[in-house]
Amino acid sequence: MVVAAMLVIIIIFVMYAAGGPANGTILKARPVQSTAITADKTLAGKYFTMPYPARYTEIPTGPSSSLQSWILVGHQLTLDQESSKLSIVITALPAGGVQEDSAYKLYSAYPALYKLSQASYGHDPVVIAKRSDSSYQQTILWPHGNYLLTISLTAGTETAPLDNELQAMLSHLQWLI
Image 1: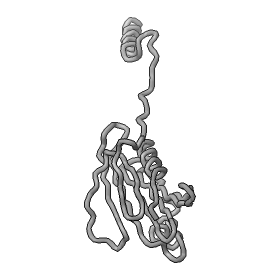
Image 2 (image 1 turned 30 degrees about the vertical axis):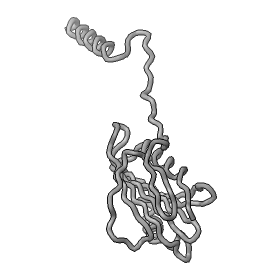
Image 3 (image 1 turned 180 degrees about the vertical axis):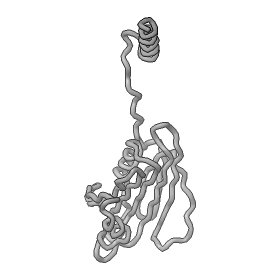
Image 4 (image 1 turned 120 degrees about the vertical axis):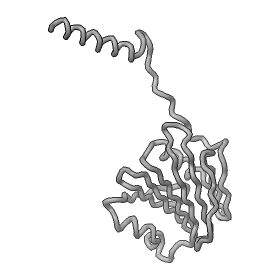
């Protein structure tokens, strides 16, 4: 009985030692992939330009009541990035501001599901609606002059690379009006 217990302990130790790094080896975390946008694509519209990662493909959109709209689908390139969808729409800003936009009203009507916050890009304040359950959805409502840019990024689950992609795109967006 004691011999069997000793044998089990030896097997566990050998398996542990074989699975870990060699003596003197320093474990390094896998490097974080940069969200640099220099070599990526550019979405050029009538109202703004915005670089976006090359993993996204533009999908044609049908007729819309918006001034301009795009759908971009991002295919998974690494284990850290999952497939995602960007919906980008520019409309006229409602007379009462962002709070009168139907998307804002929807998000504010469900505070248990969406967390609303504010940030600034350039000189413009934006409203951020982030889904608080396990699904990833982050929508940016960006008023600029008489226009409202709505960018919504959705995916299966939340990951830091998705947040980084969105922040890089927004920080490099340039208004043409």
